Image 1 (cartoon, rainbow, N blue to C red):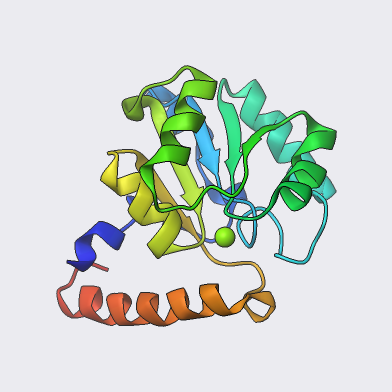
Image 2 (tube, rainbow, N blue to C red):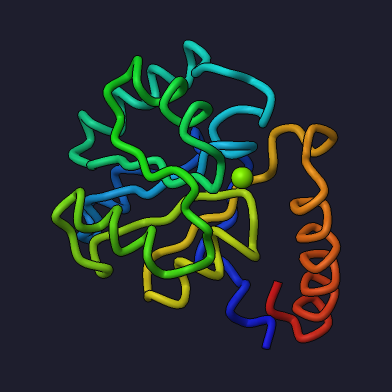
Length: 168
Ligand SMILES: [Mg+2]
């Protein structure tokens, strides 16, 4: 049952994603999580390095939508200054926010990448719809709320099972 939590790709940070090779494979859009994927959960705005990455994503030919389970104020304050479209209160791993983001980009599941730091929300949601899922290392674990900390416990269990099966 834990196979659905397996990302297609694991990287340290978003900066380690090889945009050129994904573009060459036909991918045209990125659905990215916000908290602990782009910045720490308590960091209100994008860092200069991240702003440069947003530009690189665009110049590489990708559309970008932030899909976050966090509330409107947080997500709009983060995405607004960079004119990045977003879906807030997404309730990932539910399918709806992923469908909505793909509609916003005008892209199909075969063209879409999901980037996030959580197997139970970002990876599971993306995998169920057949998107290309990328798991990053969470930026600041100590800043996480109680719901996410619970998810991390399930992740650890899933990881040990997947490792035992030789899938990780
Ligand atoms: Mg996150």
